Image 1 (cartoon, helix red, strand yellow):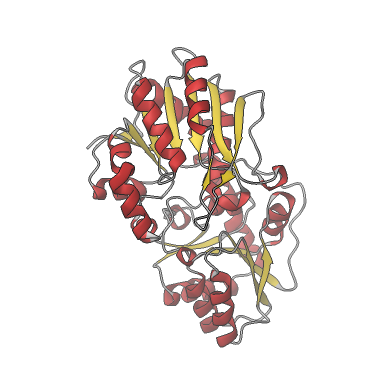
Image 2 (spheres, rainbow, N blue to C red; image 1 turned 180 degrees about the vertical axis):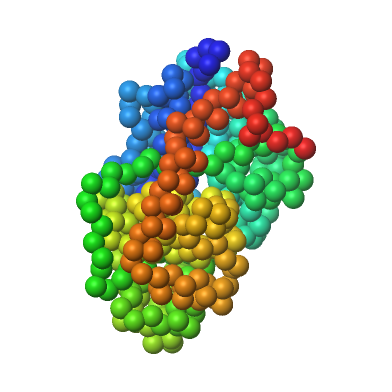
Length: 391
């Protein structure tokens, strides 16, 4: 590294329920701090401390949590009155060289872009899948309003995008933006596997993500109804969004699978680790994912994975550690049939190959190194990295 860099990451919030992008952001910042960068995070905090994701080690990252307020009236609009003020103060005091904004559409994202323009600091936008077509169509009317008022201008002012996969980069290009894109996947910290995996009497297939229409749970229910394997149960872990759990439960009841599907609610920390440790199979049937961090997590616990072409995980097939199939119930059913007919030993071997795969491709040290090279190139103090694509 040519010199110490001063980097600011901004994002809407650090709730556990906000999804894998929050954990990916804090983990990336800690990895950057370990490489010697001066890293700050500014985030809205709309949750008690025990509902937040694991924060970076303060030895490596300074995290600023700003309390949210609720407007009066019927609109239930949350805002942080000190967000812009804090971003400006940190930028000036720390001589911030790059603002790396995570997410889109919210007032805090607009504030970060506006301040970057005002202070002439290069803006990096990391959409975390929010420019994918499925995400754009969700609450589309709200996004059309934001697009016209501020979002398009904010995106146009970005010097660079970060995409977690090639499909996400393609979605950015399809909208019509031509700035350079750094394609850098999320990283993974390998867990300790000091506890020997036991073969379950009742085998367990795990879904761990938000219970949201984009996650494809209705396809999973229909697929499972086609196979109906004996001695298997499906554990659904994650927070309910848009009241989708009720819709999924009705589908389960229609297919007479209520004894097979078990909802356990959100799982974080030790509860999430325990789910991975006792899983025989992990299934993420998403319609669209910019990355799918839970897939990497499952593989790190030596759990084979079934997921769809809606995720960028063709490596499951090439590394023989899972199934990467078309979106839809029929293809999911075929993969489930193949997975449940394997022996425990065969699934264990797949899981071991999966752990080696993520260890070699998605270590945080490797990911942070790529991001540092991108920052240096953007500032004109380093060569163009191979992960950057230009139009």
